[in-house]
Image (cartoon, rainbow, N blue to C red):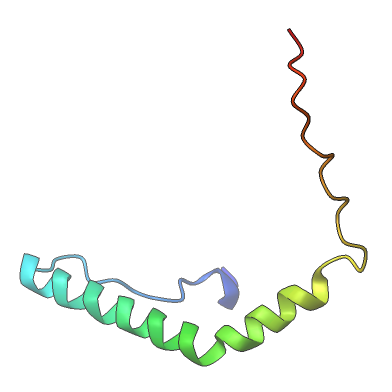
Amino acid sequence: MEPNDLPIVCLPLELSGDAAEKLIDFLYQLTEALERHYGGLLINRVHQLEPSCPPPSPSPATDDTPF
């Protein structure tokens, strides 16, 4: 077994319902804090990865029905 094969997080095997709720709430708050902190960087990264040419605009709609 290599060091990278080990789990990043060891989850407790037995939690009460209250403890599980608190753990999940904490993880949601942590995720939200990470999104607020790094959200701008992620948005900038997406814009960098987008193709330089915008996609073609859709053809104009016509009133003619095909049937």
